[in-house]
Image (tube, rainbow, N blue to C red; front, top):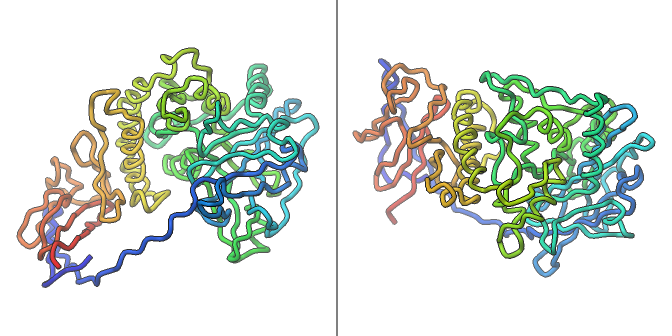
Length: 478
């Protein structure tokens, strides 16, 4: 932000109180753009991936096309993640083990723990990726022995893949049917509604049920280790790195915000610790998610074919990997119905929970300033990428105001700014909302402190959230 001349005086009206805020001059900052990393990588699956030794053998990351640049596991934007879940049918117990990923030709910072897998237990694997397209590559017939699925008909899913998931879920569902396994209930959230699951329309996005809750430790020299208490003590300078996932969003952000508790199981790599997992989320959703239930639709970008067309077979292959029912025809994976449920069920709850989520940390500060604005931007993006406007013949009910860096700073629902309930005033504000102030900038009224005005030759956007008026200016003069 550059103020060309003068000091901007901002008048904030909160009920009967009037507060003057002086916005200081701020020097200009030159924009810098880092080189775009290779977003398409390949993961070499070790031999016998469903055995204890296979789980403890690091996966190796390489570039799918070396001509487009290298792939480095220590680079957050290119990192791949693996998550294993183990089910002992005899005891009805679940366990989690997160195999390690390293760059091909390197060694782990600390050798992975060899898990104690119960005899006869079912092991399944799921994969996540912070880039665009992750291709699984076999070593010593590992893809076949692990029953791994990367997509169908020469068209991979993208960020997602799995090994042995249908068999795993088959045993789990059988155990639930005979009462040997009883997943915990979702519970009731602070808003009085059932706690959301990964199949709740207030939580899903354009490609639901993707990616995992695995995290790794990355050292300064780019080596990687399992994220365990023991390794953190041995590598105090190493930084955690996680997979951007729907599952992680639910377990680490939305559940804590709403007073809900994710299902956890013992971590076989981290002695004495419990952890979350994609498989646990999906099983819990299968048992306890009330109607309407979100199942992967035909317009999910990860299940389109290579030409971008709907593909029922690929949609079902994805569904099988997350314990969702087969769609016998296109109508059972209807894009229009999915979009309609986003509008009628998902959006209203996101707005309902705004006073809660607006006070919570954002999962990604490049998307939203807090959890609420993040969820709002995520919904708007999903509505666009699922082509819901064409399906429904209507624009998204949720829109956002963004700052100069494209970060969502406020959210509107059906054209009206959302009341986050974080203000303290009693004045009229936007739409008669007593929590939202009105502003005057150099004599120009900015209703609700949300809008754009010209200030000293610059275009300035003002937003209000969490008792804070934010200003972003772009120069219009040389």
